[in-house]
Image (cartoon, rainbow, N blue to C red; front, top):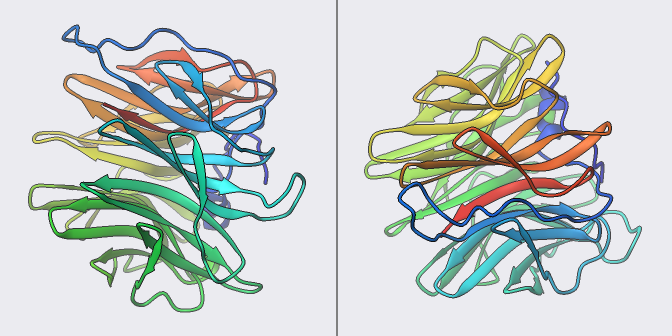
Length: 341
């Protein structure tokens, strides 16, 4: 899989590929000590991504053991619950092999998730009580299928058709939400599944849903809409779309508190893709250089964003805390997801 830093383009095909690409790696490295929140309390900040031997996990800036990994394995999501840490990603069947298998690591031990279609990848993990949900995509020879696993067993998602993908899962009470898209890249529709039933979000143009978050009675979905080759970062609240930018942008992650809604993504400015954080629709540029923001998490008064910034023409895994950059290593690492406990 391509490991070069995300480069936002103004076509949906490239934008869709952007959500599936990450940067290359030379070696792991530790970041700064980041285990205190603004109130002085000790927190655990987990970041999942990619490093020199593949899938990587950092805790408070220090690389953690990931058990069995191979080059080109990658971690896309992390969730801490109780004393356990879960990481979702992909594990190639062998070094240099094409494709791979959706994989869930629990405390560093890898479990392959059966897809019954061949290749697969796990994009998102959410844990509630004793249940572990993983959203991802299974790939056949000519098609793909949005897939949800609950405790390792595949769950039914309606309206998946011959081509679909699942990017994010969130559980609120008895409701299980999955965000993704249905249709080929040239005819993609952002889709939200609630308890397996599909709701199309994009009414015009091509679209994709990358992230879902439920807060109270409100359900937020972050993604993109492409109308006449103008690609806009988009936030849906209870199915109603709000464009976050005039064009050349993508929204990859959403997090909502009682009063604020945060979206992480990328804005293309003068041919440069810039990591961006929106708070209640107002944009903050995290880096003016070539960069990307893949994940946002809010803990108390602190806002954490995971992504990548440039280093020697390749990516460098980065964690922004309240807008201040904290490197996670040298050139070649990538940070795909952040979770604070």
